[in-house]
Length: 451
Image 1: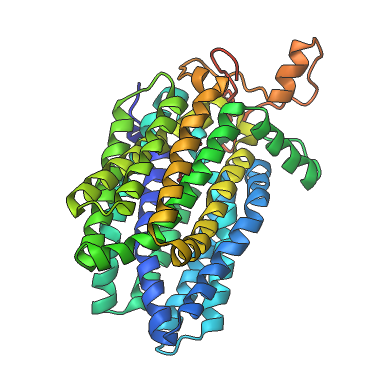
Image 2: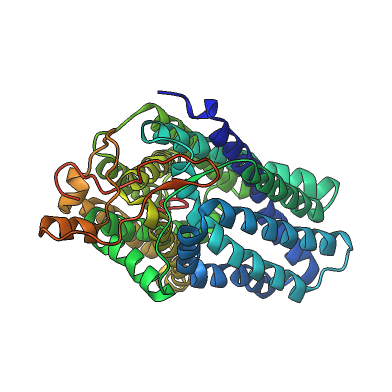
């Protein structure tokens, strides 16, 4: 099996995505400090963050349709260029010394909308550049690089902010998007064209592919709950760390341990090939209940640090394993749409956790929402094992057949499918089989983004 980095197309894609991740890693810290310094208002910060999140949630399914219809590479290239311009405008605003809240909010809104179209392209881009047997390693490489960047991102952001200003962080992000777009312009990606239909028909087809696979939709529910629980921990954890565990340094230690665990989990995923990837991944995710319970019970800091590292290690393992399973078992021509629903459900749960956690903590104390979150995340992840598709889905190395759930049903009844499309390669003149539902006995989070 050829190592993914020996493939020129994937190597350029990997370089572009990694550099883009470096820019993205410094922006959250820079944005928080820039808005806080400019306005001194938590409400202003919430407004800017909300302007990025709302259009992202609203447009994700449409972004999935666009990636399937018009080639994931072209959609990703266009969104990289648009986000480059957005971050450049924010950089100039901040470097000018008088940032205007409405300008920052508008840039966040445009950037959020662009992200809604970019996120569903991630799985198709890997599927179109790496053949089946090497995809797990390709996904693990990307996840490992991203985890390492997240580990170093806050420190790099602090260095930039306190030496040359917050605007430089956005300038770095703009440059990273430009490099990523350049890399995308230099590669060719296989794709499976789809017949032109109405937007509603395309959305329905994508959702029907989600509903037809119990392993997929049951996992999405569990991953969504995981994200909601993560929001609860992110909301209440810092306060508990400051008040009970020794201050800001305690919470930083927890987060750094989590980043290390995430990296180790991603590296392990590239070396291990679990026979039942979704089953093992979901069981591992149930371990997120550990740090939630440790926080609720007032456990000492070393235990919390270890528990959070293990929990995030499980996430690091799941992400590439889940992405590979989705790429292998979902037909290529609906992959972006199916992925968009994955992102939508995962992201939508986080604002719920952010909103409910402080209200519950105020009413009953911080331990109650933490315990509830632990029970929910542990219970829903373990409950996925009750579904036959989760237990029976296995890793295969056979060439995928490229049929949808509807086509499989039609063939089973003796009908001849009429909407099968031929896979093609844009600009390369070669063909390849599309990813398909080839479950051994019956039928990507966050979590990745998923959880």
